[in-house]
Length: 373
Image 1: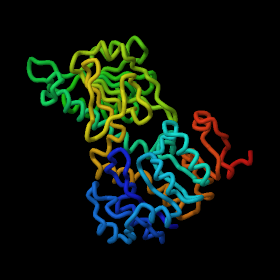
Image 2: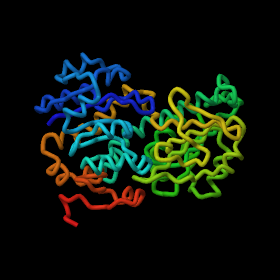
Image 3: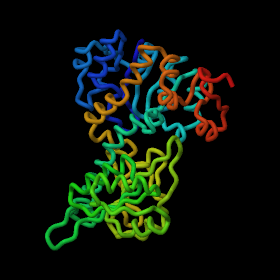
Image 4: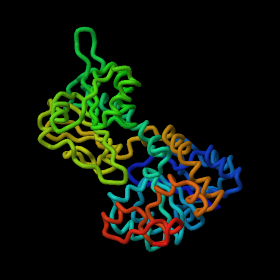
């Protein structure tokens, strides 16, 4: 199969979809890989690194799209990228279609693209590709929060995360006990912070206590406890995830108004719309804004801060799915792996994800390889 890797252009994206090690595996299996020149440069992978493992380096995104049967990306499609897609191609990416423009979806449908959304692929009731990025996001949430609590940022509280003898550590409050929340809790504990975690799911909270040995205070999430947690926090991390849907604003603007001046909020859910009412997407070059005297960090592609680690992590998690389709063909791969099939959002000109179909009022059809209705 011919596999294409274009250079990312969206949201100051610095990651590359497949690291050289993944390309090597594909080439060794007999596939042809085309990669746009400098696609890996900001992850410190050179064109020569890719040539060394057998990739063909091409000099425009258009050539990648024209040559490839399967395109591997990271960031959600831009309108220009959607236009470059070729009829009946296979696309792998973090698509977040529920938040995209309708004309992006229309391009996928008109061109009969099989669009596989990384954040929806399942395995053993987990989201293995998304998890690789969530592990990074959780750790970086604490790192970025700590950075903007320090006095080098003018509006900050000037707080040391771990405190010192006689001076209390920072209070880090995390909403959501999933992969992001767990990794954020570990990172904050490692820095000596006081950590409080909220979630509606008691089983998740029990798992947190088992793994972190009750060093984290766990609280069942409801409007009352969330309001108290937000007000208490020096650093508040929103780590709410709803599969395939836009996140709800669980933290209201009034709650943000009640926070300490100079407190920091990190909304990891911003790539799904944000779980904090006052959030709006920011960028790596301009990552924060202040509203109601509260510092907001809302970078949707936060793993791009550590692009090399993130590119390796994504490759490790995603390559088996790409290689399965390349080796076995699309139909065989989807029939043999129901978790992969759950990631398919469009196929053969129809929307195969019911939530996205309802969001944009387009026709929903189950994958035709499983059903004819």
